[in-house]
Length: 73
Image 1: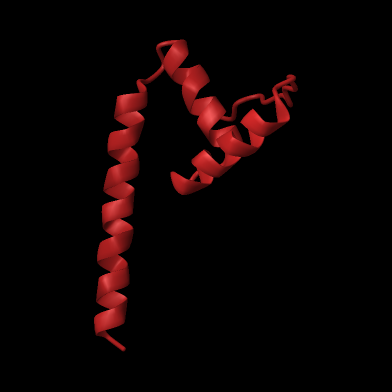
Image 2: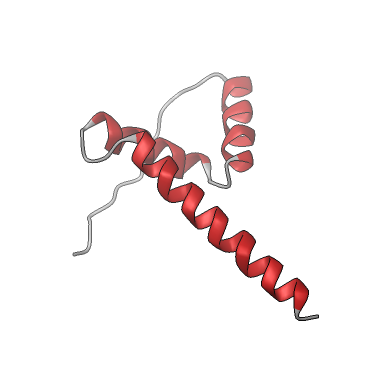
C-alpha cells in the first residue's frame, strides 16, 4: 500500500536543527526519519520503543554480517 506523502516545512532554531541532525546521524537515521518516527508514535501507530527494538535488531544483524565478511577476507 503506497502512502501519499507531503513535504512539510516548519521553523526551528538553526542551532537546534543542526544539533538534531547530528543526533539523528549518530542514531543512523536522517532528521526526517526521526521526525517521522516521532509523528507515528504520537499518533499511536507505533511506539518509539518498538522502533528502537527494530533498530537494535537491524544493527545487530549488520554487525554480524560485517564480522562474517571480515573473517572471510
